[in-house]
Image (tube, rainbow, N blue to C red; front, top):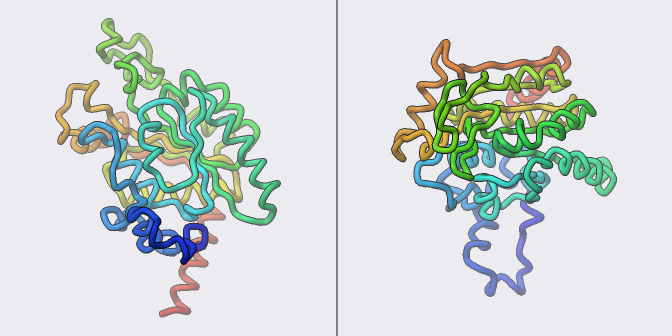
Length: 294
């Protein structure tokens, strides 16, 4: 990684906005061991956002951005929803797709980048809510996996349509009553992680974002595996505290309660044998580098 792409021409340095000068001087681009601990010190890891106070999605966004292995050569594809309110604040290339077609956009983008930049690593990461991923965009989500397109799909699972008033989504819990789902969900939560596994994803994780070190690990694994092995999928519980009747400070506890043993968001991971082998190779390389530099 490097900071070459964000350098300022010396002749224009004095007239550039102070925010951009700060980005150039302090960005984690180029830092080999960048991670969630850089949050709070680096401007590009969402200094500000327009989400609700205490929104777990803002936490998840920061952890994901901090965990991207190669941010200056990463393009994120978003969709209509709460996530689209944050992308304007993100110092990573991003595309806003129409509601639900984010995986189709990512498929074309991945192919275009491989043609435009042959032999160079260009990561593509899809980030969308449960409505865009499992309801309106399910066909395009599945078709990308069927084609074995090498990019990562991340679903922010709010368990409802948080951006438009609290309608029922396929990932809502059975029986849950929302403002615009007054009779309660009539069927079980769609098992998208299992569908992802059966549809060709080589790495699938289902968890909350209460533990930043865990989010960092799975995001890095997902992106690295998507480069070489095949499609990867992360389903992260980011509850809409506004729609489930929680206070702004209760989002973290809601996630912790939901990830306990036996609860619906307890940690689940699926890794193919090929993916396990590749992760082991990466770990061995890290140890070899550490031994040389020690």
